[in-house]
Length: 564
Image (cartoon, rainbow, N blue to C red; front, side, top):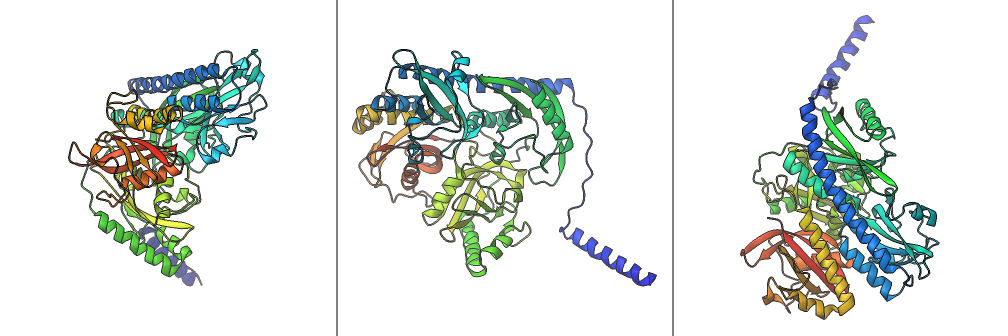
């Protein structure tokens, strides 16, 4: 009996050893011990944090000044009508980080708003996400009220900047409210910080709600809620950060791939962006070290063939079997940085072999470091029948450093799609060079200014100004243009030879139509996107960041900056 029991135990141990060595069981890693950090090291981090906070503070001061000034212009003005609409549109043009700008009456009913159709549907409804009263606004004095992090009623996420409006007799008459893209507020300077100094940041409200993290899935989550992603040392550090206005600490944190623990050192300070909020801004040194830039190892044609093979597999085996295969990090559809991802047309993540924690989450509003809503761009491409799309995304083969990714996507049916991507390691704005966030902001301001001027003076007047290099909204390094809904170029000073021609079928070397993609983005309400565009001066294709907004009458205004 003992011999038989021993044989069984020996057999089980052999099987477990085989499974472990085959990679099915991850060996338990010994927990590292926190090491001391010198005062000099923390001082260097503090200096970088001070510069970063100054950038955020300056942006918020500019934003709150614009909102307060607009509120004074609205004093004594009716709550709706053309004059209000123009005032809101002008304010939106001054704040490139805004989603929308709205006028709210004293009963918190939305009376006017800029922007997308899903926002316009809210006119006449009560604003429940930021129900501030007259007493709240008076308590703020001459400062704007800053809301907590919220999900707005149209689905966007961020904060609101709010100022009171008064009627002709000086009585409280409601507010002007700007919904702000908090992700883009932090991410531009954070991208620059990482590239120049090797640091990154995250930010939280005093109550523990995360305002910003490079992992956008964490936005809105609560540091105080237990999570398997947090270690005891991180929990202790988070408590210390929320309890004190400034300081430094160290904690153990899991890598992006969840395959090891390492020490992260952090310093933090507090910023008061306006009345009602204090933000803890935390600088850490756990940024992946950039790897040497190498040429890509597969071609776009091979990428397309890889996705097509997965498409055939999904049709043959069915959705459940296909997703199981796509989610296997050691399966036939995963090869280093080349892997199949899948998602629902509603933004739900269905397959990510290297980031299984994201499966089942909704990434519809996810942005990359430049502000491109990449999930929405991928879905838009899939809904057009499939093709290539560009965005910034962490590369699992280089410690999850953010790189430019060229993906090819195919719709399986009307409910879900698949895709895969190759990383453009040698792109001039990949993981070694940041996107110029200040020029990005100017890009958005330029297009919104053109849209405002069109509302005041008409579209033909603005297209004439686009062709004039000395017009008021021209900026060095930006290239504005206008297109009609059928693809006709209405204005483009950088290449006047194509004005009046239809460019809908004009394709770049990836088979992407700059014009078609721009129209698609404009029809969705506008936003940012990447593409390859022909530069007439350089006589070659260049990577560009393009911003588009609808101007009315089936016309779209856009401008781009070259990312080299």
